[in-house]
Length: 333
Picture 1 (cartoon, one colour):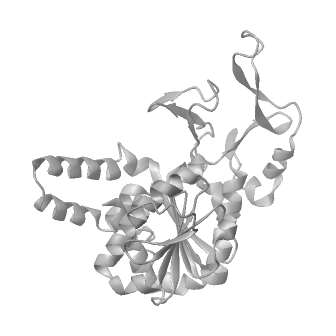
Picture 2: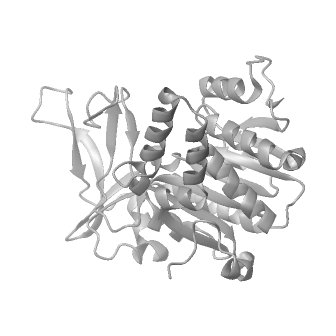
Picture 3: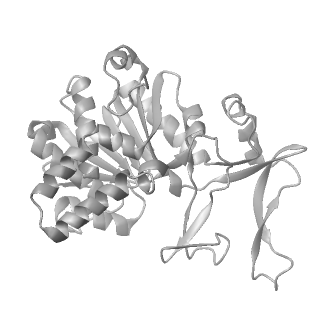
């Protein structure tokens, strides 16, 4: 249901932009490739003619994940070392180490649970100004057995980030901040590409708009939250995305919409109707699974509230969006 909703959104905005014949879907950190596969499957069902000009491009550094993505999109691992293969839906699929390597043309950018996995710098406001939070060996523990956080005595090179004009404006009243310089540079590149070559971007992630205290860096091991400084390298690390920071990095001629909650976005894309269709043709076991999935995706108590969506478009779309806003991102009345 999630992938189908995103496909409906992309198709709707694609039609609004004149149905360009040649375009590409670029996903950052595509996991096992399931989301892209669901999107292609849905497009094949709703607008099969659109697949003729579509190509898929994955930004993925892990060779193991590339193999899983190839199996999902192409139905098998060819193991020939080629960068590009043909998917089971028709469009080609290609892999790249960085966004810079991806061809520049009309593009739908997708980043789902990508930015929260990027490294962050932690900062804390002090009487002397912003200082970086660093990691040091804890002197109170047996030698070298435990780490701790310390506040830098002086401004580090990373503190220069806090002195930039656009960032200063969003730091008012904040005491602790987590910022990813890599996330900022990637969003800037996406916004520039959208403006220069056409297209749109959709970002979905755990995050906030700066209103929360920036202390969300955490670790998970075996599906349980643990101390991020305990046994480094043995757990998955994450930090909530600061959408106010990402917005400050977007180029001036690119429009930013959101963030809105996942529940609101998915309902705007018709997930409730799709859920009803699936329930009507499912057995008891599948019925419960579908209902549980729908609740997890949309409920305020689960992912529906904490997960946020943002979209990016060329600012030249402003006149069209004034009459027909991006689905899900309509201004509140």
